[in-house]
Image 1 (cartoon, rainbow, N blue to C red):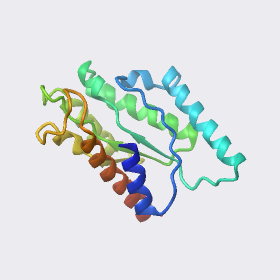
Image 2: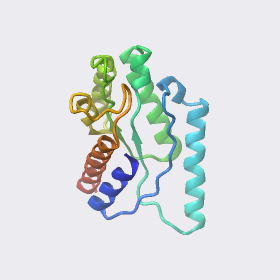
Image 3: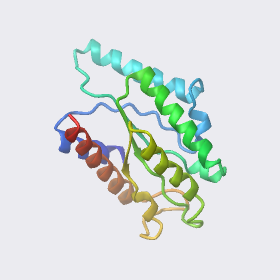
Image 4: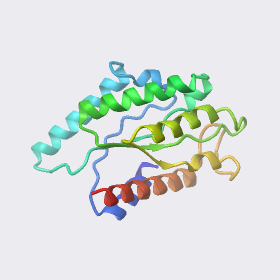
Length: 181
C-alpha cells in the first residue's frame, strides 16, 4: 500500500517523498496516545529523519501524516466517540510536535466474516474527517473488499487490494496538495 501511495502521490505532485514508517499492526488507538511508547517512537523517528535530511541539505517541502488504523478498536468494541476523540488528540499532538500540516486518513475496511463489526469505527472516522479540517479522508475503498473478494483472510487484504487503496489515497492526497497550494 505504501509504495502505491508514494508512486501515485509523486505522479500527481511531481514532489519526491521521504516516508517514515511507524506502523504497528494490531494496535488500538489507546496505544498511540501522546506519551505512549508507540507515539514517542513515531516522534523520535520523525525527528531523526528530519535531522538526517537537514544534514544532507535536502529541503522538506511538506510534512504530512498518513493514518490507517482502527480494526483492533472494532474488535475491542472501543466506544466510537472515544475512538474519534483519542484519534483527534493523537493527530493534533503529532501535528504540534512534528510540524505536520495534514493527516491523510485511509478508512478501515470490514472484517470478512462479520461485515458489520467495524462499522462504528468507520463512522467515527467519517465524523473525524468531517469535523477536523486538517484530517482529509483519501480512501474508503477497504470497506468494499470483502464483497469484491479482495481479502486473503478475515482481517487482511490481497496485495491487489492494498495497491488499489494506496493508489487511490496517494492520488487523492496529491490532488489535495496541488489544489491547496
